[in-house]
Amino acid sequence: LFAGPCDFFHGAQQLEQLPDPGEPEVAFAGRSNVGKSSLINAVTGRRSLARASSEPGRTKQLNFFNLANKLVLVDMPGYGFAKAARAVKEDWQEMMFSYLRGRPNLRRVILLLDSRIETKASDREVMELFDLAAINFQVVLTKCDSVKPRAEKARYQNVMEEVGRHPAAHPVVIPTSSETGRGIPELRAELAGFAQP
Ligand code: GDP
Image 1 (tube, rainbow, N blue to C red):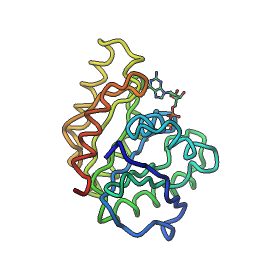
Image 2 (tube, protein in one colour):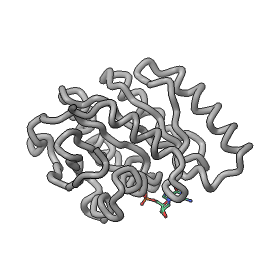
Image 3 (cartoon, helix red, strand yellow):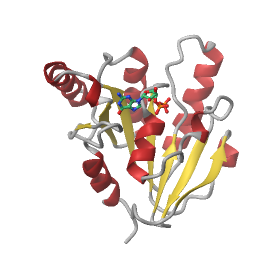
């Protein structure tokens, strides 16, 4: 699955632009700067696959990547930009909610949380959105190379408690680092479980 080609094939800024549902999809969500592009690149083994999606101006779209015609990875726009106008946030929520609700082939959302930063209100709002949309989501901790083991353990326990409060959450949290590659095999195994045979 990860040895073959992986291509960007579609960007959608509006719901009307979504590609027709095809192969099983797994979407990646997280606050801006959480390390989403780096993680998608680490998982797919492509250096700059998701870089385009973090260029200004392209951030507000859903980017679709095809993995060997067996699985589609969806890069969701980062949220939590403190300065964004309320209308922008509401637009984001509305589009994400509609995408999440209306996507029959969406198997899971991978929600990235930064291991160095406390869970923010915007993260909680997004988790509530997943609950509401009844979308199975799984938390992945990013940048674990940059915290001390003790701090990571505290953060991990905190996240486990948080996850326990959300009915749509998958109970397994994966600590990762795009720098060291930690957790990447575990995440790939999760993704492979959703791929078409
Ligand atoms: P995005 O905005 O969520 O797509 O985040 P990026 O992948 O662009 O990363 C944001 C910043 O975090 C960049 O400066 C990265 O170099 C850094 N970063 C991403 N992943 C890691 C990681 O695993 N470890 C460390 N130490 N830094 C990371």
